[in-house]
Length: 69
Image (cartoon, rainbow, N blue to C red):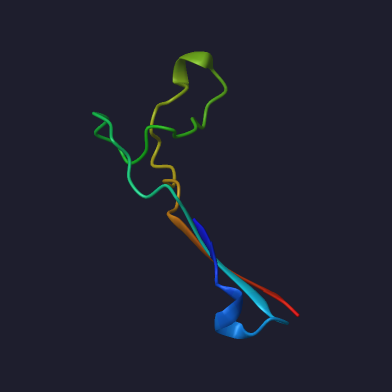
């Protein structure tokens, strides 16, 4: 999500854009483990998706500020 501030707020020579992005806010699933997209430690096809206490995907928040003079 991004928003460019109106030019009259900052003067005509400066422009500013604010932005926000988020990933992995929540997961809707019936899986009882930590993460349904977990990678297996083994190399066998039958072990894919088995949770071997791997780390879950982190929530990521990104804030941005763009200035132009």
